[in-house]
Image 1 (cartoon, helix red, strand yellow):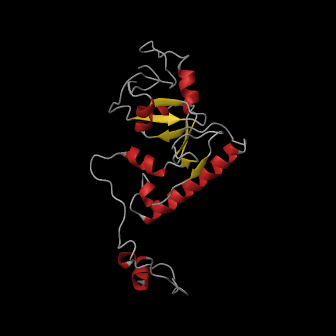
Image 2 (cartoon, helix red, strand yellow):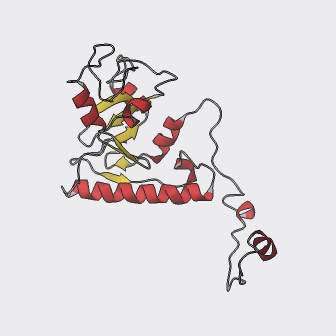
Length: 210
């Protein structure tokens, strides 16, 4: 109510609204106050599946010039960080709009550079059922220190596995919201650099020795 708002912001003068609309979400015949919920045992991969667009052939994740995406999804049920909330729906709409714009640029050959799309691990398992789940940089599986192993797919179909921390701490990788760039560049550079500690390839992160 306005009395509550004026009490919370007592330092300023708040006029009454000229008009308002109440949605009555709880009594809406189609929603009945419902919102999305993922039970225990699910992960961020489920949200990635829900927000992934679909191309003309009905496949997901195959972002590329020859097969542009046709159907995009938004809504609080696709929001990894703000599910079941109104602002989660708003943020997901902004994400979907950016994905549509990026897809149009790719389709017309005006992409600003390769974008690395985060996709569910199940997509990698479907394509490479016998391959181990190891980071392409440090060659280790999921660890508490390095975080989960993420799967990235670039515009032309290539896939790569990398720890979240290995990606975020690399100077080649840029993360803006949910959009990643430079992951494949980071991995390709790591193939030529050796870690001074273990002597193996994959050393893309600068470090100091005490």
